[in-house]
Length: 216
Image (tube, rainbow, N blue to C red; front, side, top):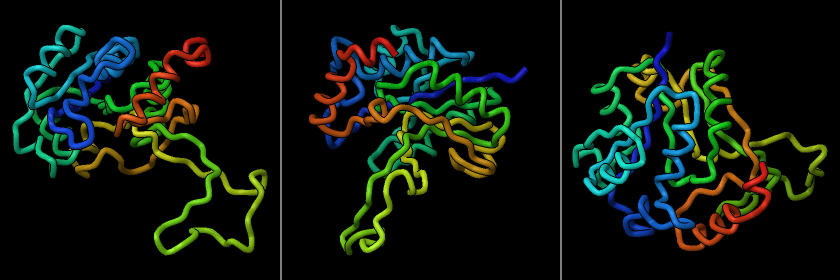
């Protein structure tokens, strides 16, 4: 049988919000939401990778296993892939569920849907549907003279950043969280928020305290 483990990278450095991964979110540290969702899911083990002893100690108290991440994989230029690859070289597993703790509205049911999908795909990620019209600094990224109605437009999706799933074999081969035949798990738009600033915190706290979130 495949060994399925989750990894929650959580470095101490954060330019937007100091010590972001441990901020108080509705009475709990931010990282606790990812750990709790993982522990309730079908993964066999929940791990946290960090360069911070404080984050590692909090994570242990929440029931996660921990691994100390070297500083060279933890500075502002370090990629998430570097943390994933460092982990893959140290820990035995078959399937990796990479969970980002800055997306605290993740639920264990989302993770389980992804684990089920990885049986048919090489990698899986979480997305939410969007019908937004995108622009960049040069102007619209659509034909302003042919604005399609929502019903007639092609379905498009945004990465939520909540989780990515891949095999150890593919991670080591492609050095990427995504590769090969990629599937996705769609989650509701209202649970797709990723915390980057203080405004995001206020929005997420409102959602966590809502009946809709708690009754889903």
